[in-house]
Length: 426
Image 1 (cartoon, one colour):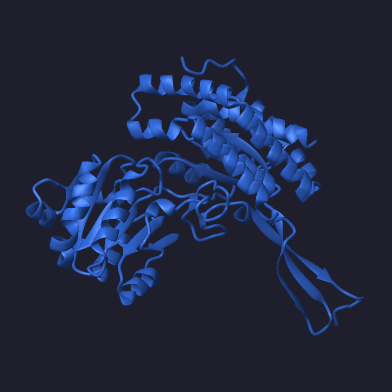
Image 2 (tube, rainbow, N blue to C red):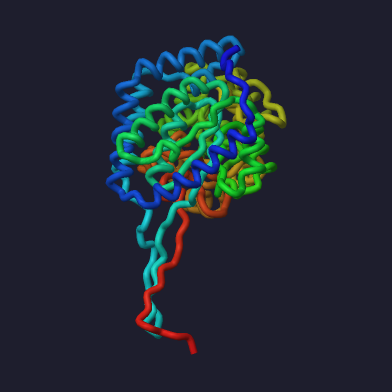
């Protein structure tokens, strides 16, 4: 058994985590930017110093995952090496260097009666984060919550339990080095799914918001069962649309990168749309590049008739997040049909148009309502680090509170500070 764990009272264990997190959030509210940054710096140093320990823990997780028959894409999400561990530490350093969102003035104005009103950022409080097989989320989530003044309860997936535990120990070491409570960042000590149930339904007194990061089944369960607000997305059904005005070489490079750079991330393209008008000029180069990289192509009748290497697509292919080296391809008449297809089949995550026609670009960006819309760039840039946020907890596709990459600033709310000089209301 991969994760033999002692029997615990899950309900009481989770409530204890909640009580400790609420107390820690109060203590963190008194910490200044310098103290939070010292904790982040020390945590990054601890991760670098503990690289061998983290990799050994990761190998335990990988061995168990291979025995379970996890796909290559899932193993890639789970796998750490020295470069990825260094990248985790580097992301914490980038978060450390970000401006502290807590206390920043979002707006300020005066009223005719002399009152001065300011809207300032404040932490959300206690955040519960549920995620699956990517152990780097442990560090990213902990660092972003710390920077934004929030205590956090982390519940990682069973596949990454040992890796996440090793990284969590480094985050704890960073907090202690800065004389902050270790309970600011807590990790659920069991892989039992019952712990998720308690976190979602029985901890409203302690947890202010839940952030899920994982597959469709996890997100759907969280959104259905949570008794506190949720920041999340269902899946990353991302599209690349090649307009007839696109540069052929650019379209080839973007399509290849969007699908094949890392197939197992939520920003990987799952469907390619291409104008029928440019099929002869643009498709051969795109297809050659994808097939040479090992990508299976599933296309509509037009594509299959044009290129015998393309397998017939089923209706379900337009709604599938493969997270693998498979790409659905559909021909469209124009930008209007591309928009209609994405609106019908997309998940509101990330879409890209490759085009030089400004009218087509403007319409694509105006009429689609996905969280991230790119022009002449790969969907794989749908990432908080690439947006200059240091890292992100996930890509939110809802319309309330946070949308797109959820970084430190998105983990805050606000309050109003009103300054008077003795005014009374008539």
